Amino acid sequence: MTGVLRLPTWDSLDESRFLQRVRPSDWSNPLPRSPYDLLIIGAGPAGLEAADEAVRLGASVALVERNRLGGNSLNVGSIPSKSIIRASRLRAAVRDAEEFSATTTEAMRMDYGVVLARMHRIRARIAEYHSAERLREKGIDLYFGQAHFSSPTLLRVGDVSLAFRKALIATGARPRKADIKGIDNIDYRTSTTIFDMDQLPKRMVVIGGGPLGCELAQAFCKLGSDVSIVEANPKFLPLEERDAAEVLSRSMARDGVTIRLNTTVTAARTENGIKVLETVNAGVKDRIETGEILLSVGRAPNVETLALEMAGIAFTTGNGIGVDSNFRTSNPNTYAAGDVCSPLKFVNVARASARVAVRHALLDEAATTQTALAPWCTYCDPEIAHIGLHIWDARAQNIPVTTYTVMMQDIDRAITDGEDTGFIKIHLQHGTDRILGASIVATNASEIINEMAVIMSAGIGMNQLSSMLHTYPSRSEGFALAALTFVRDARLREPTV
Ligand SMILES: Cc1cc2nc3c(=O)[nH]c(=O)nc-3n(C[C@H](O)[C@H](O)[C@H](O)COP(=O)(O)OP(=O)(O)OC[C@H]3O[C@@H](n4cnc5c(N)ncnc54)[C@H](O)[C@@H]3O)c2cc1C
Image 1 (cartoon, rainbow, N blue to C red):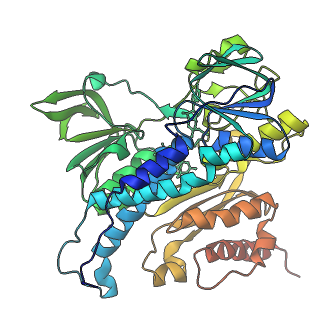
Image 2: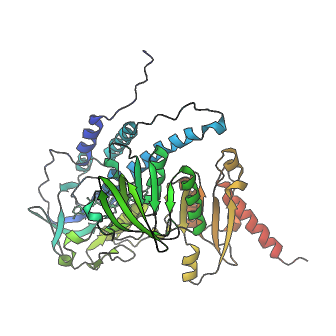
Image 3: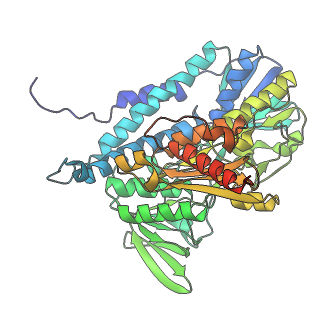
């Protein structure tokens, strides 16, 4: 040993291994078997899950992918973003290390190339499970190429026509365009291209304060970029309650993100090589100069290039393909799953909807999985997770609600860890112990929420929850504390003799 620390660097071997798994350069499409029991368009989480489920059921399966296996999640979504977020959290932990007596004498050295190299290694590793070779070994006919319908029972991929008994559309979604004057005349990034940058930008503006915008704004700021985030609404995260979004605003501001709420970007241009955004806030005009722009204003379903009208499949460009509770489209032999048809654009929903669709298509089995009961999480610091109804959903359904909130500053484990920002909130149907939904703002909320997914799926109410023991100290003990409070409140309301 020489004592020289060798940092891992970008390894082109990882990248070529990755490409060999997700899009082999020497791949020959198979000869078509006709008709396929199930033909799947799109090999993201939904398409891959569907293919697995269908071959397990003994069906002949074709899977068509125009780009790379793994879809958004593996290539440009969950996996790359969570790898980068992990690195950014470590850097922030070193920044905050003094509280734990680990004094740092100089700013932590940061090599974005190493962060990227790690992300590439992780992606290559995860790609192995669904590699092209593995799919072939499982007996799935994998075609690379752009697919479109030429009739209600035929799909065209390049020069080849594939006949099917049943088809599943799992073509996902892409970043939505923004109505900003001049934006198409300048270079900007979206979630699809943000991880192609080989250097950390000095300055970056994120347009859009949804989950992806917030996650990436905070991560790049923690990594060392000077980040601003611009959101037209008065709060971030449209799917979350106001107090959850406010905790996030404060935590991003503490990290150094410049926050511009109630602010609309009206125009974009380049001046002397610098990108300039014009903004308006309450009638006051301003401008922001930056090196990089990340546009993150929502996701649009991939429906346009499929010639869906040839197969009699109803869709809209805004909401994607219309489906029933078994994910069947208006053509009774075709189904859709994942981001192309779901308002909740998450991997767990994509996979679950694919399983439901396949089992209905091949076995005529009605849906038992409740995709509406999907937990989700925004991986900021603290994490923000939710399941079930929000207050506004309950109001829309005329369900009266009582809410129990436990603050993280009252939970011993959050205090011992020095991570006592946030809360656990449980919404109940008023006058009953029935849980309608829950929100968690906390470190590791993405893990804690899964307990609530089990509780709600099993139909466990607050009375039963109050008698379930939790490890001490733990953040999820907040569920038990909320349930105990509920039970004590109920006893106080009981008539005394
Ligand atoms: C930056 C980012 C971070 C994210 N983080 C998370 C997270 O932490 N957790 C989470 O649950 N979700 C996350 N998501 C969302 C998640 O990636 C998607 O919900 C998921 O990928 C949807 O899966 P899907 O199979 O429906 O579609 P996709 O993953 O989009 O796959 C669709 C596939 O279809 C192919 N395709 C499209 N049209 C055609 C055609 N005509 N012919 C052939 N092939 C076609 C595409 O090339 C693509 O490979 C994130 C997304 C982004 C962008």
